Length: 404
Image (cartoon, rainbow, N blue to C red; front, side, top):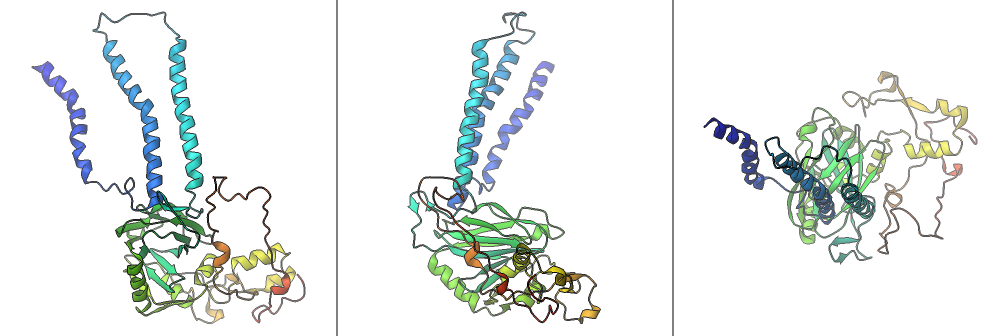
């Protein structure tokens, strides 16, 4: 009786693991069964890699159990060979099988890394559906705020907070940035996660193939309100998306720079909000960290530095900086009442639009894979750089004179 109880107790972990499998049927398998073609290809990579690794893991686990049972102390019939120490055939099997699997994983990873590069424009929207040259992707500008998400649709001229609407079967081109700390933009049903960082711009190309409601969130801890930093993603057909954009346009409200400075202040559990009008160049100002009036943009600062700087006159080109989001950022207080920290004042003429043309990638070349971002042999590209004659001296920088 005691022996039977002991055997049953040893089988309890196995029984618990078997009974747990039916409970997994209620789990949300969105990563392995997503609604977007890019996420589906990424899920296939996970399945293939897991299957290849199981080719080694399963036999090793099975042989471990077999050897433990066959060569147990109580088995007097097992062959005893105390002087055995080498087998060429066994060594070939032990090393050849993992090597072949590593080669397969390396090849699959290399191809997948380039084909699924988030910066690479989509060549297809579904298996067998090639993106035509005349198809224009939907541009969506994403800003991670504390603790909410801002989505700007430059083509439609609207913006939303914690709400993302996408037409199905149409390529989407995301431009992603952040206002303060680093976050991670992640929609499991659409594509893998991409970091959102202040002062930088990351990109993501994806497509949604099935209508429905999905969830997006930040996958990188960013402070007290991180747990509520979630947003709703709705997939709809083109007609429904056009109606949604029209409704957002008539929702009223304008998101300009002053409104953005208020919106970006930390808040939790922010409700869905829509803006029917968005100030031109807002996203570009966010990326270049110059939303505040009169502050020099990073692109202008780098351009001036690349051409030699402004010399000694540059040390006078400063203004009081009110950067504390909880108190005085964007405040209309007189300069003498603001903190003593300084910012570099703008000296360059503002650029039209938001610089979208320079930041968006060209249509993907459907020719055989040659590597992401690499030009074909014989094709060269050059970057033109504005001259200092394009830099205008504003009344905010009276000390800038002559050629730096």
